[in-house]
Image (tube, helix red, strand yellow):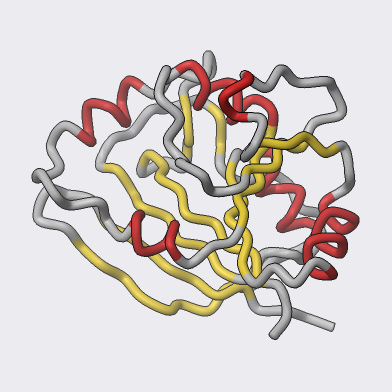
Length: 183
């Protein structure tokens, strides 16, 4: 079995993952409407992955929350800049300046089965390199008008095959697609 890379992310209905300043207040407000015990499939997804790969800005944002959300799950932070890793995370967080293809190849050779790719630019870079296998997007019922988009320019079309749509009574809609690989 070869290594698979997956995206699991929430966006505003107009496709933004954060405000221009990185703010997530709109997502926090939406999450407050979610019934206790409902995680929209997040824990099942997290249990299916070996390693999380994220960009530096996403990593810094997660650190700002105060509590580390990923337990002992290995996390690789992609950045050309040096990053600070708190002492209590040294056993699970590492840094890499590799290209998506280099990192993917290295992790595949280590025998990993599934990566979770997170962070707008990191997702875009893995998509552009043809390294994403599936995408799950949870649409939050809000229009931000501007912010940090999930997708950017890829230089070519990326075809998707619909796998599932799930609606939640509290207004979220979750879409899952398989990325159609072209040769």
